[in-house]
Image (tube, rainbow, N blue to C red; front, side, top):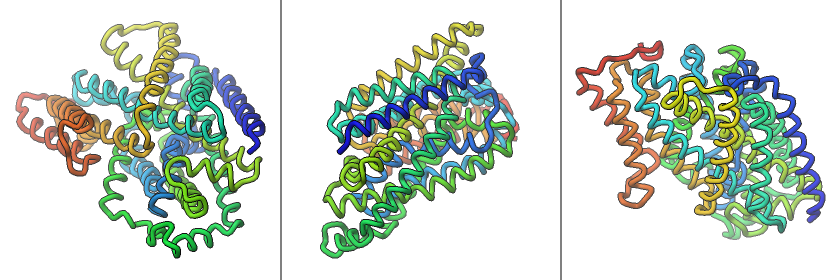
Length: 466
């Protein structure tokens, strides 16, 4: 293992990312342009940020780990990520772009005429952002530990680099760096796939199946059943549609058509790429007998040449960074615009926004680092996060778009019920069947019942709800 080569490649990569952020300062002259990229993004930029946001460590490292344990069905999470963008293109794109809101709480306030539902969303989104960033930090730590370095220090370095370029140019910097990151990820994964095939990867996997070293249904993508596919895909799709980053992406596009094309191509690319880390994990389990998150790094360090290994590890770092960067911007936008400006000071200065963004980003990075130490499974952490935000926000948002009888009291009841039910389940006070979906269904029932009973609730209509 050539640790020096790996570190040189990573250092060069970090410098390029910061350089892009420095160049993108002109797209962040004030906080609104900082949070919307000045509505300058074409389809390529959108593809970069969409694919980059999903091809994080859950997609790459987690997909390899699931592939090692279960076989081809390890690609299901990646496929679900792709489907989430197809759903966004068909269901949200036109409606969200027409309204032009930078944040989802702005939509909720416009639709229901109250701020309470928006506040609940802000709180829920803050918790979920912490969880997603913590999952990325877990992969960063495992990455550096895989080649004998301090995992915590490595994860901190990655986080600091993302902080540097995202704070320089905001959403534009996040998008531009994601284009580069996605290119690195796809090229590295494809190169690794062909190298493994050249080493007899398919034969090695088939021999392991024949010997019983791996399950006999290793090549069966449906070996975990339809219920697994649905309980994973539905929360991922719902989470994507109600994600603050998603709202900002759509409204950063030059036009509605650019946004639609970007989302459709993101669906195609995600589904295509989903099978690559899964195959890497299957090969790792068959050849080295390893499962879990470490299988990806074992293949990178043992099966590849030093240069190919360095590029693949850079791809993992790219996957981590491309997920974290947009979350920093989205988290700051929600807290500063919707909580501080919406509830405390309606006329903050640009200087306050600039300082506040850095404080928010540093704060969430520190908290996420602490949370990451409490989990061992990346996919498990992400599933818990998606279930949480879906239960709190999916019904008020989607119900507000499509059901004109939904009221502010119904939205608030749904958000609070979802919030409480998920917390009770996660703390072990209650145990729910189909825990990834049940809290959202309970929240939806609360929305319908309270809205129908709310005879005095005056509806605030939007184009989407008419």
